[in-house]
Length: 268
Length: 167
Image (cartoon, rainbow over all chains, first blue to last red; front, side, top):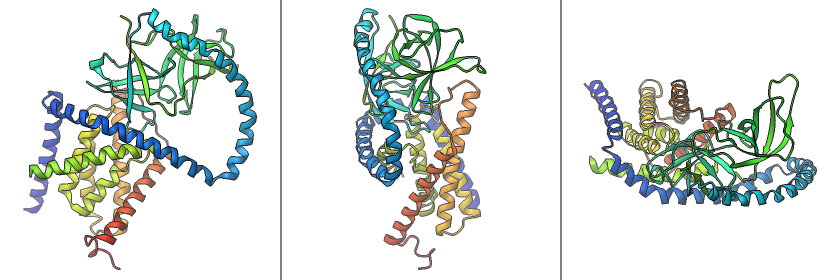
C-alpha cells in the first residue's frame, strides 16, 4: 500500500512538471512568469552588485596566499608590461577611431539600445550574462553587444520578452566573423582562446596582415553590421604545417567589470 | 497545501536570488544539488520536490536552455536521490550526506551536459557550455563542503540528526 502511494506521488509530481511545461509553451503561465521576472530583475541586479563587491574583497585575500610565487611571476610580468606599455601608447591613439565609432553608427543609421547587466547565467559558462532588455526592445538572437566605447564584447544568444542573454566573445564557445578594417577580403573568425583573450582564426595564407591592424566585424553574421571594432592585431602565427594563419587580437574592452552595454540593432 | 507550496516557492525564490551573489563570485559554486540532497535527507521527499521544482521553474526562466529542461532534470535528480536513500543510504550518517551530495551534483551536471549535447546535435542550440575536470572538481568540492557545513549545523542546533549520530 505504502509503495503504491509513493509511486503515485512520483506520478503526480511528474504530471505537475509536464503541466507546468505545457502551461509555459501555451503562454498560460506568462503573467506569473512576467511578474517573477519583473520582481527578480532589481533583486538579481542587487545580488550581482553585491557579488561583484564581495569578489573584489575576496580576490586580494586569495592572492596573498602565494606571495612568493606571485613575486616571481610579477617580475616576469614587468618586462612584459613594459612592452605592452609601448603598445598601449599606440593603442590610445587609436581610441580616436573608437570615438569615431559613435558618429559612424549614427551616420550608418544603426540603432542601438542601452542595457544593464543584471545577472550572471547559472549555466556552466562564466561568460554568459543576463541584460534587462529583450524582444520588446527589438533585440534578436545574434545581435552584437558593445561596451561604452563601441567595441564589440559579445553576441546575443537568447532573448526573452524583457531580458536577453549574451555571450562574451572571449569565451571559447564564441565565434564572430571579422575582417581587417577597410579590407573586407581579409577575413576570418574571431574566437575566444582559453577564455581570456581573442584570436583571429581561419585567415588565408596569402592574406596580408600586420601587427596593430584594426579588426572589425565583417557583416557576415546575421544582424551584425560591418565595421564594428573588435580589437587590433597582436602577434601573428603563421606556421608552415598549418593551412591557415591566425592572429592574436588585443581588444580595447575590459571584460572584467562590465555593467552597462549597448546592443546594436539591425540596420533599418 | 497551497499555502505550503507558496511558502516554499517564496523561500526557494529568495534562495535563488541570493545564489546570484555566490555565482558572481565563482560560477562553479552552484550549490543547488547539495541543497536538494540536504532537504531530502532532513525534511523528506515532499519538501525536496517542492524546492527542486521551484528551482527548476526559476532556472528555466533565467536559462539559455529551453524552458522545462531544468524542471525535468530536477525531477530526475530528486527521484534518483530518493531511490538511493530508500535502497542504499538508509541511515542518515555523515557519509550518506556526502555521497548523496556527490551523486546529486554529478547527476545534475551530467544531465545538463547530456541535454546540451542532445540539443546541439539536433541543432536546437549552439555549443556554449564549457567542461573540464578541474571545474568539475571545484564544483563537487563546493557541494561537499556545503553539505558538510549544513550537516554540522543541523547536528549542533537541531535534534533532527540526534537519533542517527553517535555522540
